[in-house]
Length: 184
Ligand code: IMP
Image (cartoon, protein in one colour):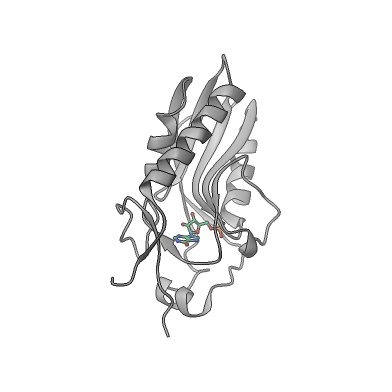
């Protein structure tokens, strides 16, 4: 695709992720944490964030799909989407979260429907604590009252790709976060 414009550079990401890692290290000093990454967008963020945390840490992954609610990415770029609120679990966690310090790791907090749904699933395991780490936040799009405990960057209502985020499964491997231009 032509016309991708860098919104957040790899250097800015690295600096912010390191700061988030220090915050988590401080908040959970002397304790173990489990990072639960939301597939697939959070994979790169999780791997960088976890390496900035100096604690005993383990990983798990959960998969969700909002298939059926969202229009195609091309349509979303033209007119935005209006989710009906249905999120489907495509992959459950492999381990129990009971009594553990869980950090849900997500690429972007948009309407908030996904994380609201995932929070409920994790809460049902009765974790010792549950925090949300999100790299990006589009607060203007929120439909559910949910916030990240650890946030990378607040961004305007633009469709972004790179550093794990995709457009029709592409561009996840771009090192910078880029804006996809709207059509028309
Ligand atoms: P929410 O349930 O509306 O908060 O949506 C969160 C999910 O929507 C993210 O995990 C992404 O998969 C997707 N998403 C939202 N905005 C963007 C974007 O700008 N680029 C790529 N994916 C996005």
